[in-house]
Amino acid sequence: MLSWTLETTSPERTRELGKALGRLLGPSSVVLLHGELGAGKTCFTQGLARGLEVAEDEPVTSPSYTLMNPYAGRLPLYHFDLYRLVSVEDLVDLGFDDYFHGNGVTVVEWADRFPQLVLEGLRVRLEHTADDSRRITLEADGEPYGQLLDSLRRDWTIVG
Ligand code: ADP
Ligand code: MG
View 1 (cartoon, rainbow, N blue to C red):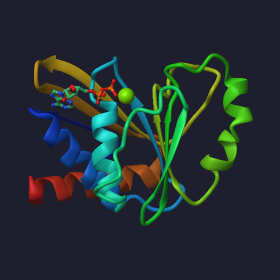
View 2 (cartoon, helix red, strand yellow; view 1 turned 30 degrees about the horizontal axis):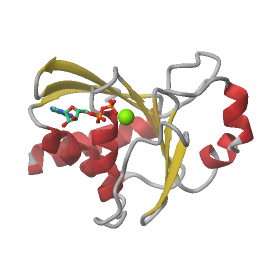
View 3 (cartoon, rainbow, N blue to C red; view 1 turned 135 degrees about the vertical axis):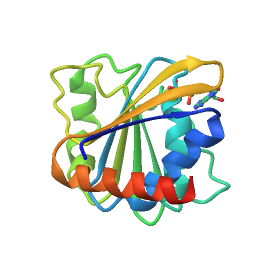
C-alpha cells in the first residue's frame, strides 16, 4: 500500500501514531512532514521520538531557529525544520547530506518549502479539519516505505 489516510481527534492520538511509526523505523529512514503551522508536525515528531526510545524527559521541540535538533534513541534522530531556512546552501553547510545518508532517522518539517530539494521518504501530510482533529495522509515514495506503511496500518488497527 502506498497511501493511507486517517483522522486523529486529539494531539495525544497524533503522538501515538508518531510513536507507532517510530517503533517501526530502521536505519537510514526519512520521514517528510507537510502541513501548515499548527497542523501537528512537531506533535507527530514528539511521538516518533518516543517510538525511537528517545528518553521521556528529553523535550522534543521545533528546531525552527537551529534548523536541526539531534536526539539519541535506539537510532540517532535528526529533526529538521526548514520553515526559517533562507537558502538550500545553508542546509548544505549544515552537512545535510551526511544526515540523510547516515544510519539515523531523519525527520523534516516543511520538507516541501524548496522544490529544488528532492527528498525521498515516507510523506506525512497533516491537515486541520477541526479544533482537535487532523486528517493525516501517509504516502510512501517507493517500496521499502510501502512495506513500512503496511506494518504501521496493521499495528494501528491492532492497538487502535
Ligand atoms: P506544527 O509543527 O505543524 O506547526 P505543532 O505540532 O507545533 O504544529 O502544533 C500543533 C498544535 O495543534 C498543538 O498545539 C496541538 O496541541 C494542537 N492539536 C490539536 N489537535 C491536534 C491533533 N489531532 N493532532 C495534532 N495536534 C493537535
Ligand atoms: Mg513544528
